[in-house]
Length: 220
Ligand SMILES: Nc1nc2c(c(=O)[nH]1)N[C@H]1C(S)=C(S)[C@@H](COP(=O)(O)O)O[C@H]1N2
Ligand SMILES: [Mo]
Image (cartoon, rainbow, N blue to C red):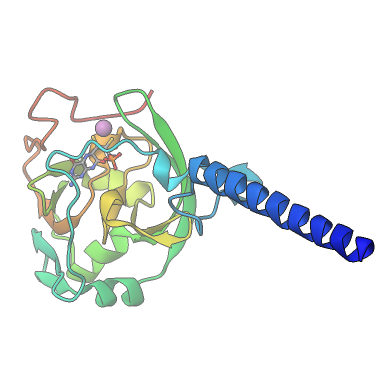
């Protein structure tokens, strides 16, 4: 009888202890930060990568939510044929590439990201580049735009990305497409791309360029 009582006491004690531990663990786990993008790649060929969560949010009109079912990417201007692609046309229609490239914002922060995409050059060649074209103007769904010299695009294997750190671009990072404007400041890395125009207008200035930021945008 004594033994049974003591056994009961031990069981009750153990249950109470377990409950206390569970409650403390529960409180503690709520305080631990959860990863926003748990599936993302954080290391590539021995190099540490930044997180998709490390970007600052500073888009001119906030996050855009583009609908993949009616999305179209238009190639216009000084091309042999104006072309319109669906999201699937682009993602399945061109050779894919990946590389680690750092985005530097003029605000002073930067991120090292593994980008996956296709060459803007391949897209332009498919439409046919007219010899008078010297500038590539890119437009986005939020009214943002920027431009880059055609030669820069052709000589530096410039990507348009649809994945970063192994994940499809989230809406806040520019879904479906962001320009990976390697060695140029962040304001050339246009997100939510909807149109790419070939132009002979060297005086074109994009959203931030019109507001005083250098059109060259070279990261020193
Ligand atoms: N469509 C669009 N693309 C954009 C911007 C924007 O406001 N609209 N901001 C640019 C700037 S200034 C930077 S630094 C990079 C990264 O901005 P993010 O951190 O908001 O993604 O996106 C660039 N691309
Ligand atoms: Mo920026």
